[in-house]
Structure formats: C-alpha cells, structure tokens
Amino acid sequence: MNRFRKSTVIVFLFLVGTAFQFIGHAHTGDGLAAWKHDHPNKIQFECENKMVGLPNDSESRKKKLPVGLWGGEHISMEVTDQRTTIEYDCAHGTINQRISLDRKGRFNVSGTHSPERGGPVRQGEQSAGNPVRFSGQVNGKTMKLSVRDSVTKELVGDFTLVYGAEPRLRKCL
Image (cartoon, rainbow, N blue to C red):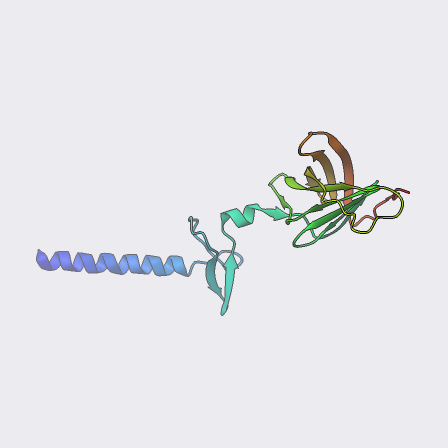
C-alpha cells in the first residue's frame, strides 16, 4: 500500500505539472493568454521571442483624451501627453494632467480659468487663474464641455468641440 501511495503522488504531481505547463503555453487568437488576477504590475508574456506587456485591469479601463487640437465656436483646446491648454475669446485656461475618460467617454477634472481683457498687458501682470472644473463627454470626434467655477459654482460656459477642427475665436479687443 505504501508503494501505491508513492505512485499515486508521483502521478498526481506529474499531472499537475503538465497542466501548469499546458496552461502556461496556451494561446488565444492573438498568440497570448492571461489569467485574471490582482497583480499590480503589467503581466509579461513571451510571444515569438518577444516580451509583451499586457495592461492590468485598471490600466485597460482608462482611455485617454486623444492628443491634438479640439476646436469649436469660441474655444480651442490643445491636448498633449502632460497637459491641456484652452483658449477662449477673452480668456485662457489650463489642465495640468492628461485627461482620462471613463467607459462612457466622460471626464471631470480640475484646472484654471484666467479672464483676459483687451489692450496691452502691464509688465509683471499675470493672473494665476481661478479654479474651475472641466467636465464633459466625448462621443467619437465630438466633445461636449462644461466649465464651472469651483468656488462660486457659476457656469463659465458650455461648448461643443470637434477633434481636428479649426477653432473659431474672436479675441477681445
């Protein structure tokens, strides 16, 4: 009986090892397979002699606002990897982060809004800007944007922007 148990354990270990080896070499249609788990870093897989990083769950859910020019009536929005700058007819603003979109294309980020006036700017005159919330939703190449003062909750403006469109600004005089 003792010999039978040893044989059973050896067969069991062999089967478990084979199963893990099979799972480790399983492929999907694109040549990769992954187990869902809570590992905080990217999962590495070897595929055709290259290491490929797959995003973890939190990375894959976050889409970013496309980099480039978004234009609309009375507004221009230039999106880069690090920040977004906004130009209005008589104001400008900044968002000092990359804008992330949720699954429905919505966003809500803080930034600044600095009113401008016509005429020359005095030496050393520069406004730090008022804190505002930029919220909106992107659907395809169209964005609905709402800008609201963070302190007074007053609406600065509602805008419709299109990715790649030329802005139509009338700078204040």
